[in-house]
Structures are given as C-alpha cells and as structure tokens.
Amino acid sequence: MVINNQSRTINRPDKSGQRGYAMRAINFSKDNLPVQWQYVKRNLSELGIGEQLDHFEKRAHKAIQKLIQDDIYEEFELQIGADRYERSKSRLDTRKGEYPRFFTTTFGTSEIKIPRSRKGLDIRYTLFDKYQRRQRKFDSTVILSMLLGFSTRKQGKFFRKFIGDSVSHTTASRLMKNLEADLKEFRTRPIEDKYKYLLVDGFWVKVLAKGKCLRKMVTLVVSGITLDNKKEILAFKLAKGESENEVTALLNDLYRRGLKGKHLKLIASDGSKGIRTAINMVYPYAEWQLCSTHKLRNLADNIRYKVKNRKKMMLEASGIYKSKSRRQAIKRFERFCLKWEEIEPKAIRCFRKDFHNTLAYYHFIEDRRFISTTNHLERDIEEIRRRIKTQGYFKGEGSLNIWVYGIISQFREEQIAKEIEERRKRPKDMPAHLFTLVKEPQPESVQLS
Picture 1 (tube, rainbow, N blue to C red):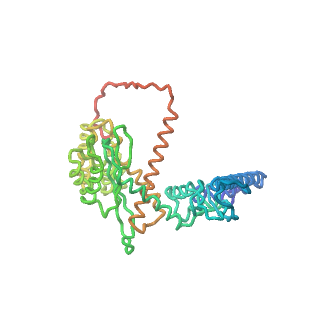
Picture 2 (picture 1 turned 90 degrees about the vertical axis):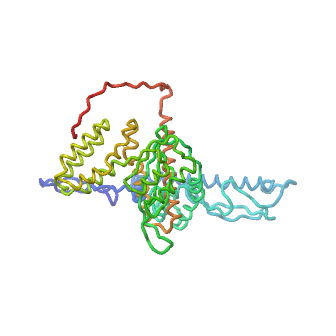
Picture 3 (picture 1 turned 180 degrees about the vertical axis):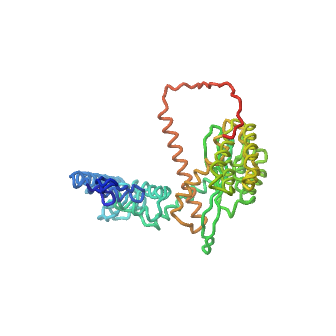
C-alpha cells in the first residue's frame, strides 16, 4: 500500500527467508512539510475526501474576498457622502469606474476592485494603506518564518505551497529591516534594577566586514535572573573579541540604563580574562562564578588517554559539583586530584586552575541551578546559532544585529505566552500560602561519586 512517493511499505525477505514488511521513514522536517501535505491531499482526493477539502478552501477564500470587497465599497460611499446612483446634496464626489488590485492575506491572494473618484477625492481605507499590497499580519508571518529558521528563499517555497502566494527573497530581507526601530528601542530602554544574577557569554559568527573581507566576530550576550527567578536577555553587542574593552562597554551600557547592581549578587561567565576584568571594573562588589560546565569541558579536552580514562574521570569530576556543600565539594576535589595526578598530570593542572571560583554558587545554594553554569544562556545562544545558520554569513553588522534582536524578541514572546498559559491552567482555589517541610540534616559524604 503506497502512502506517498517517499514512504511506502516494502515486502522484503528477512534473515529467516520469510517475507515481511519494512516501513521507510517519512520526512516531516519543516522544509518537507508542505510537500508531505500535498501527498496527503492527493491520497485523500483518491478516497473522495480531498475534493471536499479543496471545495471548502475555495468557498472560504471567496467569502473572505467578498467581505473585503463589500467593506471597500461601503467605505467609499461613506467618504463621498452618498450611495451608488444616489442624488444627494451632501455628495462630495462621484464615481468614475474602478481598477483591480491584488491584496495578499494569510488566506491567500484576492483580486479586489478599487473605486475611482472623478474629482480626485483622497479616499482612505481601514483595511490597507495607500499602495499596500499585503496584509501586515502576512508580513509578520513571513518575518516569523525566517526567525524560526527558514532562509529568505525557503520561506517563499513554504508560503507558495500553503496559500498559493509568497514574497521574493529581496522583499523578505527588506521586511526584516522593519525591525530596526524596535532594535533601537531595545538598546535604549531603561532597565529596572531588579536582577540578582547576570550570565555573560558569546558566540562567533561570520560577517562581511566593510563589504570586502569575511571575518569571524563574536556577539556578546548578557542575560539576567530577576528577584522572582525569571530569565531575560538584557543586551547583546557585536564585537571583535571577548576583550576587556568590549565587555566593559557592554556592561557600562547596562549600568547607564539603570542596572546599578543594588540587588546584584553574582555574575557567571567562562574563564575569559577580558570578561573577568570587565566585571571587576563595572560591578566590583558582585562575586564572580566560573562556569562549571566550561571547566569540565576544559578537563575533557586535556585528558591524554581519552579511551581509557575519560569516562571515569568525567563521571567523578561531575560528581564534585553535585556535592551538598562547598566543604564536601573541596574534599571530593582533593581526592580526585590525588587519584589522577600521576596518570593525567596535564588534565589535573588545568582542573586545579581557578577551581575555587567554580564554587561561588555555594554561597547562594538556593539558586544553584541558575548560576552554577551559564547553560541557561547557552541554550538560548545555541538556538540563535541554529536559526541564523541558514544565512551562512551576514553582509554587515546591521543585518546581524536585526536578526539577533528578532530571535531574542521571539524568545520573549514565547516566554510571555508560556506564563499566560501557566496562569490559565493554575487552579483558582489554589491556596495563597505554601508550607515548606524541613528535613533533618544528614551527615556529609566525601566519596567521589
């Protein structure tokens, strides 16, 4: 039985000589989804169901087109002060034929007729502005499709399959530039001083510098954890590297816009000297947390006998950061170093360096899941990297900044929608007071795992 031309049941003999059935995997990726939908519609039409769906879609599209047309005629008659063929003293103008216009909405492209005024009365419509050919919601959907990972060309194929029309890749790129005003507002808005932790990290991207040479640049990103444990990306900056001057400029901008650090307890980052020096300069009274994940990565990279020792060492090293207290973590660390120092001297030297800075989160043990590592920020950075991968490289800094801001704003919208959904699902009779059960203290263990 054929499902479609990319997925079918195949009668094949198995190892015992008997014939069985093997199912080829169906590709439901984003790029292939419109194609798969066409196969579904074709198979449904063979069963006599697809024709009903197509007929329903056509009827819905005609209803939308008639609704738009009727609204245009009604607004035209209101603005000239008389109905069609009506003789009235309040009439401001008369009708002089009409001309066709194609208008694209999320339901498809409709051909509508725009009435002309004989005396040149300026007629304004609420559905669209002068010379507008697309619904703003459709433009927003095009931008959203690219921010979710489609390239400027792939989005054209996607919309052409679903609604029968699309925009060119040049128009799609031009639509992205509409985010420039929002980007400027994001970079100049005041920041409320309500953050107790900051996470600083960066990712590298290829940019065509001054339209000549392609070079790698780093985008520095700062994320904050509020007093009520909500995460938010506060700022980002394209820089030549993670140098002291670049990071200081970014942190100074946060300070200037209102993040004075009144509630700031700790800042987490990787081991970059430039980031660490900049933190001491702008927020000297906040503790610095060296990311434990970065520390473990460096340990893994420096293990000499990877096949023999890597699995055991990484399991024991990660157990250090699962300790219940700072004292227990240090004891486990010392035992770990004594055990492996002669076998893997280079790895242990790397692990000893700045190790105690990876334990700063034990001073705020109630929030260790936020600050022991920069993974909360790295997950967002990895998603940004995945979505801009379709671009290959950027033709300028302005283009990159717009894309990064668009993706960050999408994160924020998704977070707000999630919070609203959680509040909606929360029972109305939930008690306002919560009770905490306190367990008796257990004796500490200093075992490695």
